Image: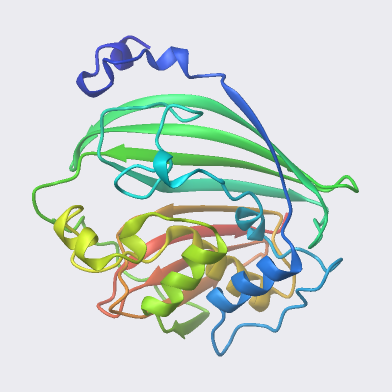
Length: 292
Protein backbone atom coordinates (compact mmCIF):
# COMPACT_ATOMS: atom_id res chain seq x y z
CA UNK A 1 0.00 0.00 0.00
CA UNK A 2 3.02 2.35 0.18
CA UNK A 3 2.46 3.75 -3.30
CA UNK A 4 -1.17 4.54 -2.53
CA UNK A 5 -0.29 6.21 0.76
CA UNK A 6 2.10 8.61 -1.01
CA UNK A 7 0.07 9.13 -4.17
CA UNK A 8 -0.41 12.89 -4.40
CA UNK A 9 -4.13 12.94 -5.13
CA UNK A 10 -5.22 10.69 -2.26
CA UNK A 11 -3.21 12.15 0.59
CA UNK A 12 -6.51 12.96 2.39
CA UNK A 13 -7.00 9.32 3.30
CA UNK A 14 -5.12 6.08 3.41
CA UNK A 15 -6.24 3.66 0.74
CA UNK A 16 -6.12 0.83 3.27
CA UNK A 17 -8.83 2.52 5.34
CA UNK A 18 -11.36 1.85 2.57
CA UNK A 19 -10.43 -1.69 1.59
CA UNK A 20 -12.82 -4.16 3.22
CA UNK A 21 -15.65 -1.70 3.73
CA UNK A 22 -19.05 -3.28 3.10
CA UNK A 23 -22.54 -2.13 2.31
CA UNK A 24 -25.83 -4.02 2.09
CA UNK A 25 -28.78 -2.89 -0.03
CA UNK A 26 -32.17 -4.34 -0.87
CA UNK A 27 -33.79 -3.85 -4.25
CA UNK A 28 -36.15 -5.13 -6.89
CA UNK A 29 -36.49 -4.82 -10.64
CA UNK A 30 -40.21 -4.18 -10.81
CA UNK A 31 -42.15 -4.83 -14.03
CA UNK A 32 -42.39 -1.07 -14.49
CA UNK A 33 -38.62 -0.58 -14.22
CA UNK A 34 -38.04 -3.58 -16.47
CA UNK A 35 -40.29 -2.03 -19.09
CA UNK A 36 -38.40 1.26 -18.87
CA UNK A 37 -35.04 -0.45 -19.22
CA UNK A 38 -36.24 -2.64 -22.06
CA UNK A 39 -37.42 0.42 -23.99
CA UNK A 40 -34.08 2.16 -23.41
CA UNK A 41 -31.99 -0.67 -24.91
CA UNK A 42 -34.42 -1.74 -27.63
CA UNK A 43 -33.56 -1.63 -31.34
CA UNK A 44 -34.98 -3.32 -34.46
CA UNK A 45 -33.03 -6.56 -34.01
CA UNK A 46 -33.52 -6.84 -30.25
CA UNK A 47 -35.58 -9.78 -29.04
CA UNK A 48 -39.00 -9.18 -27.53
CA UNK A 49 -38.90 -9.47 -23.77
CA UNK A 50 -41.41 -10.56 -21.16
CA UNK A 51 -41.14 -7.87 -18.49
CA UNK A 52 -43.99 -9.13 -16.34
CA UNK A 53 -43.68 -10.22 -12.72
CA UNK A 54 -42.04 -13.63 -12.43
CA UNK A 55 -40.32 -13.52 -15.83
CA UNK A 56 -36.60 -14.24 -15.94
CA UNK A 57 -34.58 -11.12 -15.30
CA UNK A 58 -32.33 -10.60 -18.36
CA UNK A 59 -28.61 -10.78 -17.60
CA UNK A 60 -27.18 -7.48 -16.28
CA UNK A 61 -30.60 -5.89 -15.77
CA UNK A 62 -30.01 -6.11 -12.01
CA UNK A 63 -28.06 -2.85 -12.50
CA UNK A 64 -31.39 -1.00 -12.45
CA UNK A 65 -32.68 -2.75 -9.32
CA UNK A 66 -30.78 -0.72 -6.68
CA UNK A 67 -31.36 3.02 -7.26
CA UNK A 68 -29.64 5.34 -4.79
CA UNK A 69 -32.29 7.61 -3.27
CA UNK A 70 -29.88 10.44 -2.48
CA UNK A 71 -31.32 13.93 -1.84
CA UNK A 72 -30.41 16.60 -4.40
CA UNK A 73 -28.46 18.40 -1.69
CA UNK A 74 -26.10 15.40 -1.48
CA UNK A 75 -25.26 15.26 -5.20
CA UNK A 76 -21.97 16.58 -6.49
CA UNK A 77 -21.65 19.01 -9.40
CA UNK A 78 -21.41 16.06 -11.81
CA UNK A 79 -24.73 14.62 -10.62
CA UNK A 80 -23.20 11.64 -8.84
CA UNK A 81 -23.88 11.12 -5.13
CA UNK A 82 -21.07 12.76 -3.18
CA UNK A 83 -18.28 10.40 -2.21
CA UNK A 84 -17.39 9.35 1.31
CA UNK A 85 -20.48 7.29 2.18
CA UNK A 86 -19.22 4.00 0.72
CA UNK A 87 -16.82 4.87 -2.09
CA UNK A 88 -13.66 6.72 -1.01
CA UNK A 89 -13.55 10.53 -1.46
CA UNK A 90 -10.48 10.89 -3.67
CA UNK A 91 -9.24 14.16 -5.11
CA UNK A 92 -10.40 13.78 -8.70
CA UNK A 93 -13.12 15.53 -10.67
CA UNK A 94 -14.22 12.63 -12.88
CA UNK A 95 -15.46 9.18 -11.92
CA UNK A 96 -16.40 6.45 -14.40
CA UNK A 97 -17.21 2.76 -14.54
CA UNK A 98 -14.20 1.33 -16.40
CA UNK A 99 -14.68 -2.44 -16.48
CA UNK A 100 -16.50 -5.36 -14.91
CA UNK A 101 -16.61 -9.13 -14.50
CA UNK A 102 -19.91 -10.92 -13.85
CA UNK A 103 -20.94 -14.54 -13.28
CA UNK A 104 -24.47 -15.91 -13.03
CA UNK A 105 -25.84 -18.86 -11.05
CA UNK A 106 -29.49 -19.62 -11.72
CA UNK A 107 -31.93 -16.97 -12.93
CA UNK A 108 -33.19 -14.01 -10.95
CA UNK A 109 -36.80 -12.96 -11.56
CA UNK A 110 -38.51 -9.70 -12.33
CA UNK A 111 -40.43 -8.54 -9.27
CA UNK A 112 -38.59 -10.63 -6.68
CA UNK A 113 -36.79 -9.10 -3.73
CA UNK A 114 -33.03 -8.83 -4.16
CA UNK A 115 -30.22 -8.35 -1.66
CA UNK A 116 -26.86 -6.90 -2.66
CA UNK A 117 -23.78 -7.17 -0.47
CA UNK A 118 -20.90 -4.97 -1.62
CA UNK A 119 -17.27 -4.81 -0.54
CA UNK A 120 -14.37 -2.58 -1.58
CA UNK A 121 -11.66 -5.03 -2.62
CA UNK A 122 -8.85 -2.74 -3.82
CA UNK A 123 -7.81 0.89 -4.24
CA UNK A 124 -5.07 1.00 -6.87
CA UNK A 125 -3.31 4.18 -8.02
CA UNK A 126 -1.86 4.24 -11.53
CA UNK A 127 -0.28 6.67 -13.96
CA UNK A 128 -1.03 6.43 -17.67
CA UNK A 129 -1.66 8.45 -20.78
CA UNK A 130 -4.43 10.37 -18.98
CA UNK A 131 -2.10 11.13 -16.04
CA UNK A 132 -2.74 10.14 -12.45
CA UNK A 133 -5.76 7.93 -11.78
CA UNK A 134 -7.06 5.55 -9.14
CA UNK A 135 -9.02 2.33 -9.71
CA UNK A 136 -11.44 1.25 -6.99
CA UNK A 137 -12.54 -2.39 -7.30
CA UNK A 138 -15.91 -3.19 -5.74
CA UNK A 139 -17.29 -6.73 -5.42
CA UNK A 140 -21.04 -7.38 -5.32
CA UNK A 141 -23.11 -10.46 -4.59
CA UNK A 142 -26.75 -10.13 -5.61
CA UNK A 143 -29.07 -12.81 -4.20
CA UNK A 144 -32.68 -13.56 -5.08
CA UNK A 145 -35.43 -15.22 -3.08
CA UNK A 146 -35.03 -18.68 -4.62
CA UNK A 147 -31.27 -19.19 -4.38
CA UNK A 148 -30.16 -17.68 -7.69
CA UNK A 149 -27.33 -15.18 -7.43
CA UNK A 150 -24.97 -12.96 -9.38
CA UNK A 151 -21.34 -12.34 -8.45
CA UNK A 152 -19.75 -9.23 -9.86
CA UNK A 153 -16.63 -7.08 -9.70
CA UNK A 154 -16.67 -3.46 -10.88
CA UNK A 155 -13.60 -1.34 -11.58
CA UNK A 156 -14.37 2.35 -11.02
CA UNK A 157 -11.74 4.80 -12.26
CA UNK A 158 -11.14 8.26 -10.80
CA UNK A 159 -9.53 10.76 -13.18
CA UNK A 160 -8.66 14.42 -13.54
CA UNK A 161 -10.91 16.52 -15.76
CA UNK A 162 -8.60 17.69 -18.58
CA UNK A 163 -8.32 21.22 -19.94
CA UNK A 164 -9.45 19.92 -23.34
CA UNK A 165 -10.66 16.64 -24.79
CA UNK A 166 -7.98 14.31 -26.14
CA UNK A 167 -9.22 11.04 -27.60
CA UNK A 168 -7.47 7.88 -26.40
CA UNK A 169 -5.72 5.51 -28.78
CA UNK A 170 -8.20 3.74 -31.03
CA UNK A 171 -8.69 -0.03 -30.99
CA UNK A 172 -9.87 -1.30 -34.40
CA UNK A 173 -13.12 -3.20 -35.05
CA UNK A 174 -13.29 -6.91 -34.41
CA UNK A 175 -11.75 -8.70 -37.42
CA UNK A 176 -14.18 -10.88 -39.39
CA UNK A 177 -17.13 -10.70 -36.96
CA UNK A 178 -19.85 -13.36 -37.21
CA UNK A 179 -22.49 -10.66 -36.81
CA UNK A 180 -22.83 -6.90 -36.80
CA UNK A 181 -25.96 -4.99 -35.79
CA UNK A 182 -26.54 -1.25 -36.14
CA UNK A 183 -28.06 0.60 -33.18
CA UNK A 184 -29.21 4.23 -33.32
CA UNK A 185 -28.03 6.46 -30.47
CA UNK A 186 -29.55 9.83 -29.62
CA UNK A 187 -30.47 12.09 -26.72
CA UNK A 188 -33.77 10.29 -26.11
CA UNK A 189 -32.10 6.89 -25.69
CA UNK A 190 -29.52 8.29 -23.28
CA UNK A 191 -32.22 10.04 -21.27
CA UNK A 192 -34.32 6.87 -21.06
CA UNK A 193 -31.38 4.78 -19.86
CA UNK A 194 -30.44 7.41 -17.26
CA UNK A 195 -34.04 7.46 -16.05
CA UNK A 196 -34.38 3.67 -15.87
CA UNK A 197 -31.14 3.36 -13.87
CA UNK A 198 -31.69 6.54 -11.80
CA UNK A 199 -28.32 7.81 -13.02
CA UNK A 200 -27.99 11.59 -12.69
CA UNK A 201 -24.43 11.82 -14.09
CA UNK A 202 -24.73 14.94 -16.23
CA UNK A 203 -22.43 13.79 -19.05
CA UNK A 204 -25.33 11.67 -20.35
CA UNK A 205 -27.99 14.42 -20.68
CA UNK A 206 -26.57 17.91 -20.01
CA UNK A 207 -24.67 19.03 -23.13
CA UNK A 208 -23.48 22.44 -21.84
CA UNK A 209 -22.04 20.79 -18.70
CA UNK A 210 -20.55 17.92 -20.71
CA UNK A 211 -18.74 20.24 -23.11
CA UNK A 212 -17.97 23.13 -20.77
CA UNK A 213 -16.92 21.28 -17.61
CA UNK A 214 -15.89 17.73 -18.49
CA UNK A 215 -14.65 18.74 -21.98
CA UNK A 216 -16.27 15.93 -23.95
CA UNK A 217 -17.33 16.87 -27.50
CA UNK A 218 -20.84 15.40 -27.10
CA UNK A 219 -23.04 13.53 -24.62
CA UNK A 220 -21.41 10.28 -23.51
CA UNK A 221 -23.14 6.98 -24.28
CA UNK A 222 -23.44 4.94 -21.06
CA UNK A 223 -20.96 2.11 -20.63
CA UNK A 224 -23.51 -0.10 -18.82
CA UNK A 225 -25.98 0.40 -21.68
CA UNK A 226 -23.35 -0.75 -24.17
CA UNK A 227 -22.61 -3.78 -21.98
CA UNK A 228 -26.30 -4.73 -21.77
CA UNK A 229 -26.68 -4.46 -25.54
CA UNK A 230 -23.61 -6.66 -26.07
CA UNK A 231 -24.92 -9.19 -23.55
CA UNK A 232 -28.28 -9.33 -25.32
CA UNK A 233 -26.64 -9.70 -28.74
CA UNK A 234 -24.50 -12.56 -27.43
CA UNK A 235 -27.57 -14.26 -25.94
CA UNK A 236 -29.57 -13.79 -29.13
CA UNK A 237 -26.91 -15.24 -31.43
CA UNK A 238 -25.90 -18.10 -29.13
CA UNK A 239 -29.45 -19.07 -28.21
CA UNK A 240 -28.78 -18.97 -24.45
CA UNK A 241 -27.42 -16.44 -21.94
CA UNK A 242 -23.74 -16.85 -20.99
CA UNK A 243 -22.63 -17.92 -17.54
CA UNK A 244 -19.83 -15.35 -17.37
CA UNK A 245 -19.33 -11.94 -18.92
CA UNK A 246 -16.51 -9.42 -18.72
CA UNK A 247 -16.21 -6.02 -20.35
CA UNK A 248 -13.95 -2.98 -20.53
CA UNK A 249 -14.44 0.54 -21.85
CA UNK A 250 -11.64 1.51 -24.24
CA UNK A 251 -12.92 4.71 -25.91
CA UNK A 252 -15.79 7.13 -25.20
CA UNK A 253 -18.81 6.78 -27.47
CA UNK A 254 -21.10 9.75 -28.06
CA UNK A 255 -24.74 10.55 -28.73
CA UNK A 256 -24.06 12.00 -32.19
CA UNK A 257 -23.19 8.67 -33.78
CA UNK A 258 -24.68 5.18 -33.75
CA UNK A 259 -23.12 1.94 -32.58
CA UNK A 260 -22.44 -1.35 -34.28
CA UNK A 261 -22.72 -4.41 -32.04
CA UNK A 262 -20.11 -6.91 -33.18
CA UNK A 263 -19.54 -10.52 -32.16
CA UNK A 264 -17.21 -13.35 -33.11
CA UNK A 265 -17.76 -16.82 -31.61
CA UNK A 266 -14.82 -19.10 -30.78
CA UNK A 267 -14.40 -22.27 -32.82
CA UNK A 268 -15.47 -24.44 -29.86
CA UNK A 269 -18.65 -22.38 -29.42
CA UNK A 270 -17.96 -21.84 -25.71
CA UNK A 271 -17.06 -18.15 -25.81
CA UNK A 272 -17.65 -15.03 -27.89
CA UNK A 273 -15.63 -11.84 -28.33
CA UNK A 274 -17.79 -8.73 -28.54
CA UNK A 275 -17.45 -5.02 -29.10
CA UNK A 276 -19.34 -1.80 -29.71
CA UNK A 277 -17.92 -0.07 -32.80
CA UNK A 278 -18.16 3.54 -33.94
CA UNK A 279 -18.84 4.40 -37.59
CA UNK A 280 -15.17 5.38 -38.01
CA UNK A 281 -14.09 1.81 -37.28
CA UNK A 282 -12.88 1.78 -33.67
CA UNK A 283 -14.22 0.08 -30.55
CA UNK A 284 -15.79 1.80 -27.57
CA UNK A 285 -16.18 -1.32 -25.43
CA UNK A 286 -14.74 -4.81 -25.62
CA UNK A 287 -16.35 -7.80 -23.96
CA UNK A 288 -16.15 -11.58 -23.70
CA UNK A 289 -19.08 -13.91 -23.01
CA UNK A 290 -18.50 -17.48 -21.83
CA UNK A 291 -20.94 -20.42 -21.74
CA UNK A 292 -18.78 -23.05 -19.96
